Length: 317
Image 1: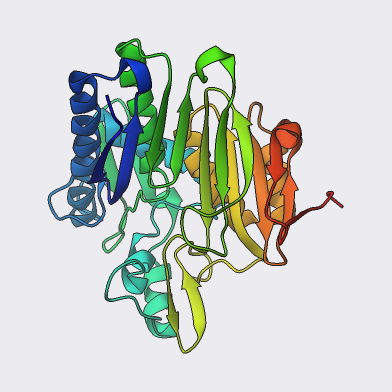
Image 2: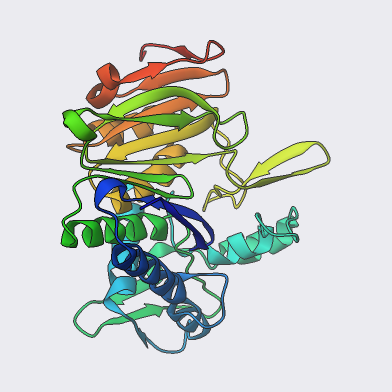
């Protein structure tokens, strides 16, 4: 069966199950993606996340295990990153509205008010009770930096259940290369050129049974008065992160980890981000700088090759 594509979880999702794909498998996969969107979207008023946000400062809200797991994992990455990854950044995200027709640069007064509501330590997950509680009125969860990773892992789980041996899942740039190519060869996955349109790549990474997630300045942005504003916001300043990086690609076993880490590492910057990646087993990263430099962590150095002559691989120093 041919690959299937749908617009779901806020992006274009393509699943290719290759030789063992069946209508039932595709149906189950896209139904699962719609289910996750219906629970976790920050842009709908009928989701569990919206209900949690409405009850901020009022009461804990019962949540599905999907939501509990994603919020708990997000908080783990908040701790790991020293707070530069923060799922309670919703009030700031709402102010900027990047990716909508209403994107704008907020005033300092607006940002200060929104930032006072951002603190992942005020998000309480009670796994035993199955609830999530935001301690202060006006707080808002936004799982946009991690929910797609969870969704990709769920697609992988369904593929395994159907005993499909190889597949490529692309959830708006969150790639899961499931299994390996026929004959045991590695998949060859392009790494996005952060200075160009989606689909252009700077080089190719060879992987088997791995996930790749990229965070970068090109994904969602707008330009005002000649200045480029991207969607990766710093929970300390409220402004887009600016640290000399164009993008970070994470390679890992689980997509939820790659998703959480791509935002965390991008926000941490080159040296702190590298230190975090090198401390984690089975995880690697590709950093692309504003000067078109490319730095690769030790785990995948031999598997990645730059093909665009504008970009140049440099050693760590």
